[in-house]
Structures are given as structure tokens and as C-alpha cells.
Length: 185
Ligand SMILES: Cc1cc2nc3c(=O)[nH]c(=O)nc-3n(C[C@H](O)[C@H](O)[C@H](O)COP(=O)(O)O)c2cc1C
Image (cartoon, rainbow, N blue to C red; front, side, top):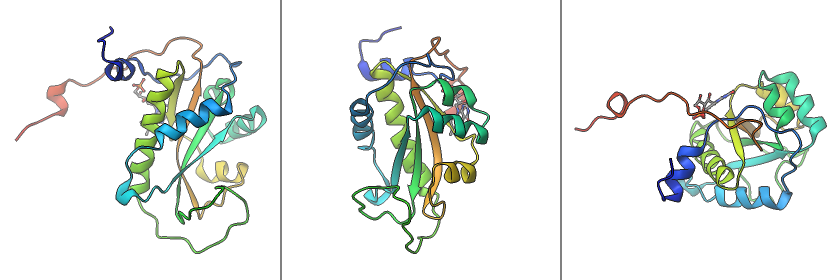
């Protein structure tokens, strides 16, 4: 049901999709456009510790299926984006280069909040651009890091998001009522 409000419309239309058409290629420039805007999300102290690793390679995505139950997302999406917390958070010209070994900062849960906000914006922007998505925490962090050649001491995997053209439209999930989740004092 359209409300004539584009933000509300895209929020109402977004549903997790776990199976995609398996053939659409999303251009790198399009993924960069979505991510550039998504990364305008707020971060604690504006530290911007989140990094995104975009995996388009079908071979690599196939390998990743060995470390998650979320198989159809990985094999049929156009790409999956791994959002990680960079514990060192240097202003590297290029993130995820192998062989970087500098002392790690203490683990922080704030990164998970920052990543959630970036990922949410990415999913809404993707929906607005005609794609569907699925956020996933159900994957083996260590195995993913090994397959993707990431230093797990530096890059803490947080959230995986698939993006692609839905094989079938997503369905509205059952939601609690406002009375069940909101109170005023
Ligand atoms: C933090 C988080 C982790 C999730 N992990 C998975 C996952 O591993 N696999 C999966 O199929 N869906 C996963 N989901 C998707 C949820 O199941 C889904 O968002 C929920 O059922 C509501 O449906 P909707 O996204 O269509 O509104 C996750 C969602 C969130 C927010």
C-alpha cells in the first residue's frame, strides 16, 4: 500500500529475501553508489570503524557456503556484503590488504551498533534501487575470515547482507503491535 512518502514506502516494501534470480550482475559502480550513501550513517564518536567487503565472485561465494546454513542467499544473490568492525580503524587508502599487523584495540560492542545502522541504510537503498536483501549473522566468523583472507584480530565480522533480484517477492513478517513494544512515561 503506497503512502506517497518514498521513505515510508521503501521501509514497508523491504522484506528479507533468501533466494534471488541467480543471474543479475549488479555493476560495481552501482554497489559503490549504494554503499557510499549507506556509509553516511551515524557512528559513535564519528569514529567510522566499519568496513565493507563486497563478494561478487561466484566461486568465492560458493566456498563461503561451507561455513553457513544460509546457502541460497550466497549462491543466488548478485553479491554479499560482509560488514566488519576494523579494530585498528586507520585511514588506510585500501582496506583488507593482507599482511597488516599492528596492535589491536580492545574489542567493543559499539561497532555492532554502527554496522547495523550502515547495513540498514544499505538495505533500504537497495530496495529503493529495485533489489532485495537479507541481513545474516548465521555464519562461522572464523571460517569466513579464513576463506576471505581477513585478519580476524583486526577485522571483526559482524553482519553479512545479500543483495540481488528476488526470485519471488519477499513477504511481510509478523510484527508485534505498538502496544507490545512501545511505552510512554
Ligand atoms: C541481526 C540479524 C541477523 C539475521 N540473521 C539471519 C540469518 O542468519 N539468516 C536468515 O535467513 N535471516 C536472518 N535475519 C533475517 C531475519 O530473520 C528477518 O529480518 C526477520 O525474520 C524479519 O523479516 P524481514 O526482514 O522480512 O522484515 C537476520 C536479521 C537480523 C536483523
